[in-house]
Structures are given as structure tokens and as C-alpha cells.
Image (cartoon, rainbow, N blue to C red):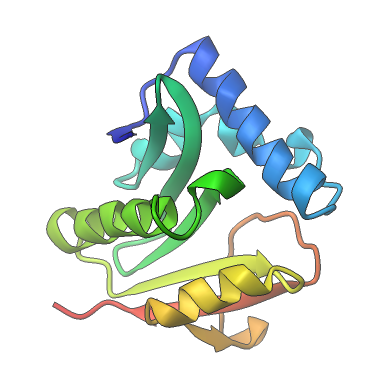
Length: 164
């Protein structure tokens, strides 16, 4: 398995859409349409152009995980599109942890960000545990320091202070 910086290809986009739709709709039953997530079709422009980035994890050439960093300004970034297929979660694969460490290393070495925020559906308790274990704290929506688009499905908001 390998984690690589996103590079456009129609095959990668198709596999990424499959991953996202599986996690959001087949597994979590959120009913989110891809038209609510146009960023997936514009990753270079949406994430990479302004100092953020996006990574995909592959196993035998197939996309099995993703994570993105949207840089909102010089201080705040948003963790987005963090997905893995179920068989890659937890031990022995721990793909989520590896993807998170990739993004965290990028934030430390390539940005001056001081805060990361994210939204996650209220029903996704496994995600909440993961974020809290990795230093994120739940905040009220009114405390969100930036505005960004996300398909709101009774979302919880989390924040993490970046220390150097």
C-alpha cells in the first residue's frame, strides 16, 4: 500500500468517487450527491493551488483511501475528504492513521497553519473517536473560524491547534 500526492487521471477520479460514495452513502446512509461535492472534480484547483494538498492511498493500484487539506487562509486549514474502505481501518492496516500522519507532516513542514478544523456527520461515532484520539476537540459551529462549503448532515465541528 502506498500514499501519494493526488495527480489527475480519469481513473483516479472515478475510483475516488466510488470510495466517497461507498463511505458516505452505502455505509453511512447519508444520501450525499456528488453534485454537492464539486471539489472532487477540481482537486488541483480547489486544494493544491492555494497551498493545501490532497493524497490518495492505493493498494495494488486501486484507490482505497483519501485525505485533503483545504487552506482557507494563512492560519486555518480544513481537513476534508478523509475516507478509507472498511477493510483498511484499524489494525493491521491503520490506513486512516497513515493518511492523517501524511497530512499532519505536510501541515508542520509546508505551512504556517495554526489551526485545523473539520466537519463530520453526527452519526459517525468511529470518526469522532479517531479525531479526539488525535488531538481534535469538538467546538460549537459558532466557533468555526472560517467559512467553507460542506454537505451538512447534522455535522459536528472539530478543531485542533497546531503546535510547533
